[in-house]
Structure formats: C-alpha cells, structure tokens
Length: 206
Image (cartoon, rainbow, N blue to C red; front, top):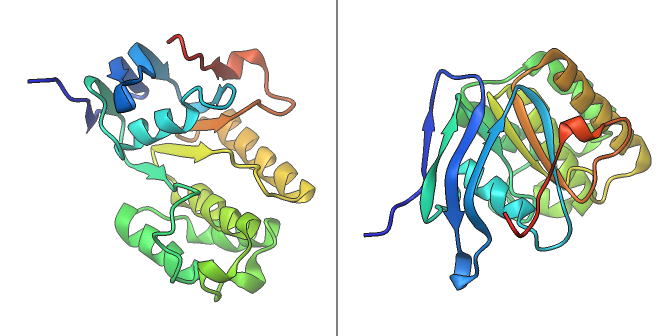
C-alpha cells in the first residue's frame, strides 16, 4: 500500500515538510523534498511549471502527496486564486465565512486593509462581478486579517495596480519584521527589497 502525506498540527514554530514525494500523472514533481519554513515570510520562486502552486496546495492539504509528511503549527489560510468556490458571495460574506471557519479575525484591521487596497466600494458586490485584480485584493485582505499560524499566497501581485502592489509588499514586510506567523509566498521572483536570504528557489530537480 503506498504511503500518503500527512498534514497535522504541532506546537513547533516552523512549518515542516519531511521527505515529500509527489508524482502527479506519473510525472515526478517532488522527490524526497524536505523543507523548514520559519516564522516570517519565505518566497518560493521559480519559472513556469516548477511546482510553486502545487507546493502551496500540498502545504494547504488540498492535495495529498504519495509519501512524506507536513507539520503545520496551527491554522492554515489558503485561497486558491483560480477557484470559483465563492463566486456567488459578496466580499463581506466571504470574510464572514472565513472568520467562521478559521475562528480568527482581526476586525480592527479590516477597514484599513480594504481602504489600502481600494475595495471598500466593492464589498457588497458578488465576487463574480469583480475584476480579477479586485477579487485577488479580497483574498489578500482576508489573508492579512485572518491572523492564521500559516498563510499561503500564490502570485499575490498578479493583476494588481502599482499602488496595490506596493501596499501588499509593505504588509508582507511588516509581518516579516514582526514574525507574525509563517507566510509562504509563491511567485516567479521576489520584489525589492527582499533578499536571497528570504527566497527558496524551487527547481524541478528537487
């Protein structure tokens, strides 16, 4: 019987991946991958098809690997930007559902975040009515308000305007400086002023 990956909580501070192997469709993507994500922000960077989104889905427990384990220190926030699961809900209803599911929420920051990302006027609209960039801002607002032990973000700057990119980058730098949870952010490259010390370069040979 093949072994399966396990996602479970631990009092440890780090998000740990141990001996993870995943071969979707018979094509080996990860083989015996072991990682330890510390408090703060870690960028997972690499080109198209290297497995950035797949790694986030594994960390979220959305898909199961063939072997290995994942140990998370607590609650995990993950919003697949390509999912249409909440399309019929308004942004406010989505926030409420996240608060109910996660049991964590910084309501005091919500107005600051929605104003900073310029989505206040869209909060009562159904998500399917919003542009791709605005929907991504809704997910980012939820991520920063949720206060989860682990937060997973996939290409957070895609389809955002320049001011919003700067705002999101500023929020990421703040949680990194204060070590507010573990943040794993997947993108092709990390923007300035992030350095190589904050980046894990994902390679298909892993």
